[in-house]
Image (cartoon, rainbow over all chains, first blue to last red; front, side):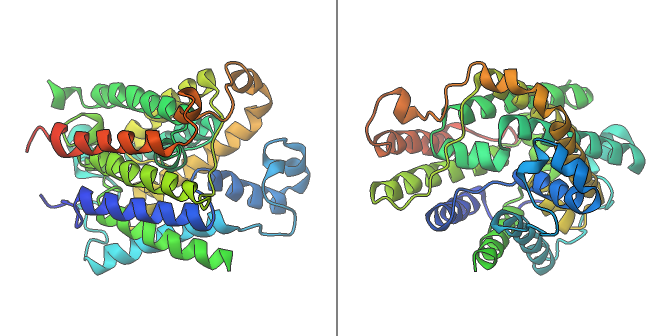
Length: 177
Length: 175
C-alpha cells in the first residue's frame, strides 16, 4: 500500500523500546502530554502573568520571564524534527494525496478541509483534556506507564481503546457494514 | 546538557515512530476499527521490550522510575474522553506532532486543539479533585498488587505474553 511504513512494527517497536529504556536510564520515562500544559503556561506567564499565577494548575508549570523550556519540551521538539527529517529522507513529506486530510477520511466525509480541521481540532481538545485528567497520554501512560507495570496505566489503556473503538465504528459505519 | 539530551532522544524517537507508521491516520483508525493491527503490534512490541529493560535496569538501581498514581474513576473517565478524541482526530498528543512535521495540516489543528484542551483542564482543575481523590490507590504497580518484591519476576512473564500476542495471536484481517 502507498503508506506502508518504512520500518516493520517489529523493528520500530524494538528500537522505540530501546530508546525509552535509554531515556529511563538517563533521565526519566518518556511522555508528551505534559508539554502542552508547559506550552500553555509559558505563553500565559508571558502574556497574562496574573492570570497564570492565579490558576492553580498552570502555576505549577513554567515561570514568569523564564521560557522554562526543559528536557521534556526539547524531547517533543526533537520528535517534531526527527519525524520531519525521516519523512524528507524517505520522500514521504507531504506524500498524502491532500495535505489537509487523510484519503480514508475524504472517502467517508467528502472533500471538506474545514470539516476535517474541525474534527482534528475537537479531537485535540478531547485528547489533552483526557490526558491531563489521567496524568498522561499514549506515551506517558500507555507506553511508559504499562512498561513500569503501573496499574492505572492498564486501566487507561483499556478505557481509551474501549471508547476509541466505539467512536471509530460510529464514524465509519458505512465501511464496517 | 540535559536539553540537548532531550532533543537527541526526542529526534530518535520521532524518527522511529514516523518510520514505523505511528503518525498515519489510516493506521490508527485501522487499529480502532480492528482491521489493521500494525499500530497495536508496534505499541505492544515497544512495551514488551521496555518492561523487561526497565525492570532489568531497576535490578541494578539504574531505572529512574516514575509511577503515576492510580485513581481508578478519574482515569476511566479520562480514558473514555481521550478515546473519543483519538478516533475523531486520528492522532494522539505525540503523533499529531509527528504528523505536523510531515506536512499534514490537519494534525496542526490537533496540536492547537490540544493546547486549548490542556488550558480547559487548567480552568476546571479545582473541580476535578473528587475524581482524583476518590478511588485513589496511589503509586501502585502489578508488583505491589501481587506483593512481589522485585518487579522483574512479573516483567519477564508479562513481556513473554505480549511477544506471544504480537507474533502468534494478533493477525491483520487483510493479511
